[in-house]
Image 1 (cartoon, helix red, strand yellow):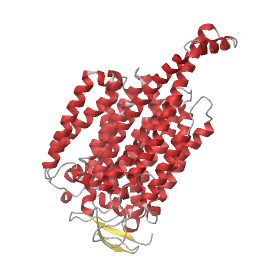
Image 2 (tube, rainbow, N blue to C red; image 1 turned 135 degrees about the vertical axis):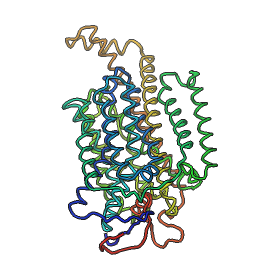
Image 3 (spheres, one colour; image 1 turned 135 degrees about the horizontal axis):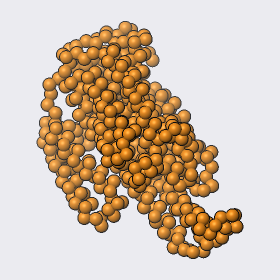
Image 4 (cartoon, helix red, strand yellow; image 1 turned 90 degrees about the vertical axis):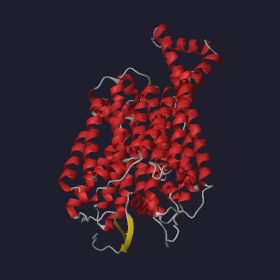
Length: 544
């Protein structure tokens, strides 16, 4: 990389960047913390059937382990900047990571589902604090010629566990026990705590005494949590036929209206909703939410179907998702430099066309081979490699540098909360479609197909009762396969719809008013982390 951007913070304190072995150790330590924020979510993706069995609950309730984490993660992102400016970066990092590790203990020890979910909420909130803070610290302590590379590294650190983590978690569950997957949090967590505590110190002069919109955050938490409860419990309470659902929707709407009014009148709201007036930000938001929901909610349902209905072990179900990492991670690694040369809209088009092909061509039935499932998830992984960087360039196009931190906070909140909502929605649709197809198959011929199958099985040394039970299980498998096939088709159409919205956005996407030249994704990452461009150097020593 021929040139790099020298960055400075708004504080007057100086900080000499690390070099050599200390820099490498610090990058490993901080990357471990960012890895854990995503790993604490990723390990639960293939574990939903195990969680349902361990806590004697249903599969759609087990999905709450994802949605609770995502909801808290989204809310934790909002005050993160104020927290580390008020209490110091190092202190906030150490406290958040230690609390995340402590909140992991219910995953290992508790037999109560409510305590398990409470731990997931705390873990998610800590992840929300850690994600923007770790990105800022990685960039801050790197020398000038490493800053752009470190900015690219922060994207890989966040997405890699979500792509490769389910495979590792499945292998752990197959080899030992599903509760051993969260154990990985502790060695990596202690490593990160030790490195940061030994190498970094807070400067008291950097702490800022600024007000924060706590009323806005409270209203934000009220309406987002209320709608999450509606999506989580809708299937249990029969949706609109339940007075509880109607009351919750009404309450959530009131909380949302109150939040919108408050944010409009407050001089410094916790979320800058004026960004929603920008055409490109709004048009790219559905694509951003859909991609995150597919990565988390869609893949968790796919794995649950393989384990619960198709008889796959957690290991082989995780292996099915492994090609996502093999295809996606190399593409994410080169997406920064590639985005310098190619129109972000074309890169995003590749992403959603590949997702559409994945949705329309993937076949899920009793005859689906492991090879075909591996190939379709290789295709999905390649699509997700084109996901985050092009959309960020489109959403942040022509935004002045001083608005990027607020834009990044809003983007992260919308993406993560939208992923939680879509995960619940996909789960409810899959369950409901399974019931529909099961009833439809039985209605078409309620006796003859099952009787014929049972008669054939009795000729294979099975008792009549065993043969009948097996035939019922075959009907359930068929209905679940048909439901997953309909979900894949839905994802294909959704990809085309969000792509059409993207093409209504306005270019050019890498220009900024009163700024010659193009803005790169690395510069936008640094600016969103609170750094501003000061001057350009050519691979020289970095001093602030």
